[in-house]
Amino acid sequence: MNLALMWGAIVSVAIYLLSTPGFCSDCGYTPGDGDGLGTCALESDEKSSEMRRLGFDEARKIFDITHRFTPHTPVGGSDEGIGEFLTLLMSMKNGSDYNFSELRIPVHAGTHVDAPGHYYDNYYDQGFDVDTLDLRVLNGPALLVDVPRDTNITADVMSSLSIPSGVKRVIFRTLNTDRRLMRKKEFDSSFVGFTKDGAEWLVNNTNIKLVGMHY
Image (tube, rainbow, N blue to C red; front, side, top):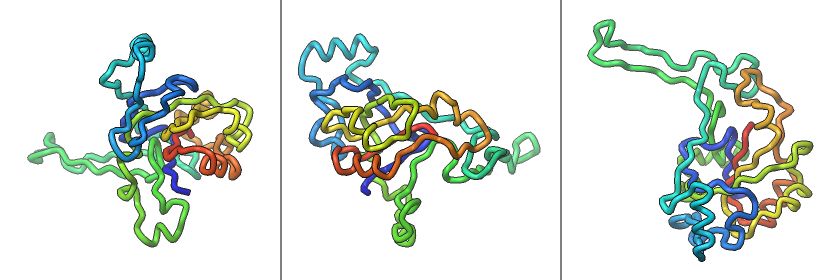
């Protein structure tokens, strides 16, 4: 599936617009979205007024929704979090000419984007790392949708969300957010996610190229 997947929201990604389902639903995004500027065209003064009422200006406010790294940041397969991840190797207080630190974290800890090679071994062998992802897809307007809190994201759930045609980036707010799993050091394998049929429905019935959600 040609789909970039993000866990724990977005890492180093500019989100220009977060909205509820239905907001700007009749314009979706411009045809060049993902291939160009990636803006959501507003065709009337009424829509512009609605944006101003919601606190958005024409410059498109950028929301940083990344999580700060701490020793308790969760990582798969661990109950202890990532532990100490930043070490000051050289210090000006100890006579060095500069401060020099070392950062060590698992690549799937905290807010991050999954590389194509994470799920497909042939892509891994061919070197499809995160630097092969298209930044034009990773940056731009995103639609924020609420998912029913008693289910994974199945095909039925995807159908019920009525995501407007043309939307390319969606952030799913699920029970994971309510449970604040990203703020607990113990990894919880019961997190909400996509089922196989839910992912297939998304690929077959939408233009979505970027999916984001809280673990």
